[in-house]
Amino acid sequence: MFQLIALPHLVKLVLAHNSRIDNDSVAVLVAFEKMKYLDLVGTGVDMTGARRLATASLSKESIVKLPVVCGKYLSGMSLPFLPFTH
Image 1 (cartoon, rainbow, N blue to C red):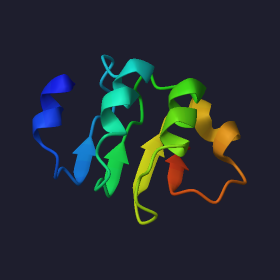
Image 2 (image 1 turned 180 degrees about the vertical axis):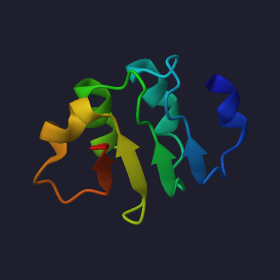
Image 3 (image 1 turned 90 degrees about the vertical axis):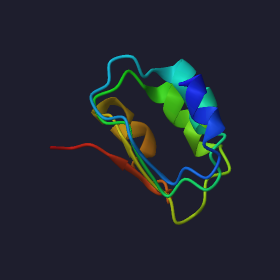
Image 4 (image 1 turned 135 degrees about the vertical axis):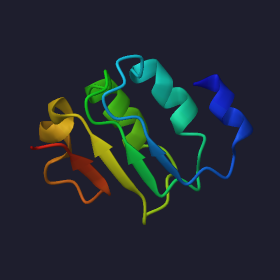
């Protein structure tokens, strides 16, 4: 994950179903303030990681897809997070 730091202009990243992505990975992902699309479906990110992403300075136009376990936390919030429901 830390190799991604060398790509500060990264705007789209699909990490779906990558078992090596977890809450610790979110620390790197929040550094990408220009991120427009981030897919974390099927990863080890849970409520702790979702909270960290929710407080990050991502663009209001950003779309972040999160695992199902994050759905309850995000329901009712007006944030650009999409819990995976399929």
